[in-house]
Image (cartoon, rainbow, N blue to C red):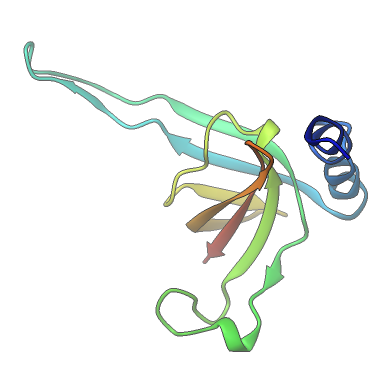
Length: 127
């Protein structure tokens, strides 16, 4: 199977991944700011823009006991997968992810690559 065919089947809004997230997952909101921009020549700082992406999401899944090291991954951390096509940009660490009225801090973001494109992001969430 060619890469284009693979991407058409698995990625994008009508792909298998999005369809499965629609059936078994839910909807979450990823919120963050693009960050302030400072211009040294003028000395002016412009406030960042607030971004709020509504995304399909896999049900939050706790980390397995063997993965919990007490530092990078802590007891109570959860992982979710969101489609890259529904994100304005790569979700930044320390953004807020809201699912089922619960807000979580994004601790890490790992892209899931299909060919040359990012198909989804795996987020590590912490209360």
